[in-house]
Image (cartoon, rainbow, N blue to C red; front, side, top):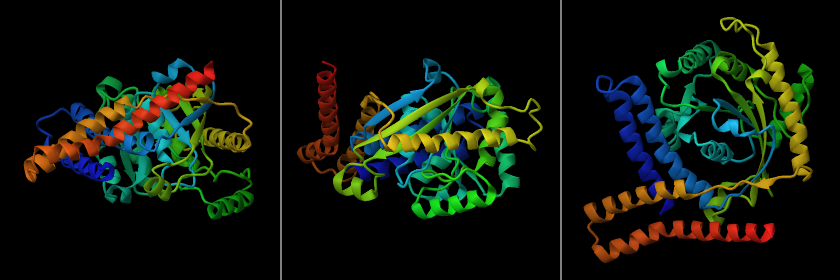
Length: 365
């Protein structure tokens, strides 16, 4: 029932979201409309988080540098490396949810991604900002967005703070073939040659960080590694598992650690930011090598499933009632059987979570 329910949730959220986005210009203020779109997209993302994090029992192990409680309150750009899996975005989604700003998260996407069923439709409502891969047009789009964020309470995103931007500087999913091309490119240009990462595309990141600098509190550099290997669709659809666990190494850079050109209007020379990102990527390649060799100590990230469970239960009850009571009217007994079957994954998640808590308590003793 999880995937069919996911499709129905995406359709309902899309229909409502498009109505809010395109049919309410005279009824709602732009700021409240933006908040309502974020609220709508969060309904689907939380449902999907249950399906792709808690149902597969994904575990996170975390190591960190310079992490303090202030990361829960600062506007943030989260950098991450791409992995050889279509599920690599889940780690950033889980991190954003842990920071309690899933509703206030944004990411750039190819404009064609908006046509992808469910995920693309929902993302195009608010969280996923489409780009055209034409730099002369895209940089205007980025600068306009950054100016809106800098307006604070007077801007379009006044209800969506603190916010975070997801950013994958490599721009494409990792593969050995792409790694070879990236290494060849690095040798030709005189850049560091990486063994575990693709070359970062610095221009988009530098432009965004430069124009957001006045309201940017931190940059979190997240290095992601899946054990024993990056998950494939087969792992999820056949084994209902993604990986044994995911190791996230977090490095936090506050505003005063980030290079900045004091002239906000001068965005022609961003070489200091470009080099800053390349330096971080060189360090990230070394960190990833240590992670693969188990040379970095980590702790278990305690993730509560109850927020995602709440969204899953509410939406599942609504969809099952709509389909099997109002439309098909299957009868009370059969309706209850179907509903219990649809809610069965919640029971499994709670059992697995309780077992993990017992194991952690035993280890601590």
